[in-house]
Length: 242
Image (cartoon, rainbow, N blue to C red; front, side, top):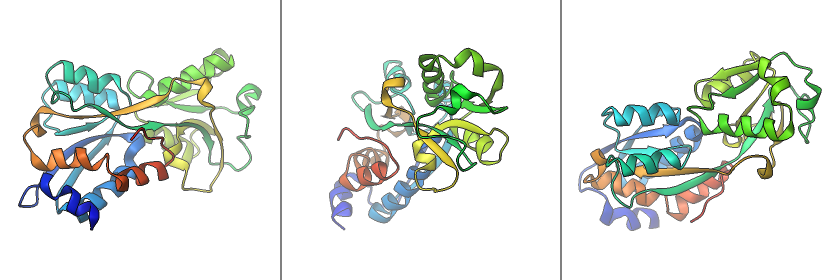
């Protein structure tokens, strides 16, 4: 109950609902955080999941989200500079990790040599224009010198969740996904891509204008920095800075 006590001054007297746009890679931890936040404060989170690029576009077009949990740092900062976010509200809530994963046991080795062998028909990636994990996958393959050879085999998901589904259902033998999507499963085979192969995926949150004067939205932003929330985030393989 220490968490509830800490958040009590920030929470409204009556239970409220906060609309939150969540980058697809953060689906599982966001659901767990929402349950914990509701238990602590009585407030509920209305979670919408998708690609960061699509959400950013919707927000610039007037979508009434109160909080945006992006998969990158650039989009929240841009929204804030456009006057669509509360001043000073942007912060990094998690740093994501990239994984090459297959639902097939033994297909992906622990050094990623399967990429050079190329003995597969399809490899899934998220749309690099909309999903930072897709951009990280492209960067990784370029650094490994396998991009040109593998490009004809790409199956592109509009979000990292769709990319994961391509691999999970066998529509692609393997693919680049977020560590958070596979860290709690023992199915298949995976290679945790070394950080030296891609730019760190700093994931930033921003309190949007519709939530600027909403005590519940502000309470959720504060909760994301709490020890309880950070423990959940780290449990899904993310690094944190708080």
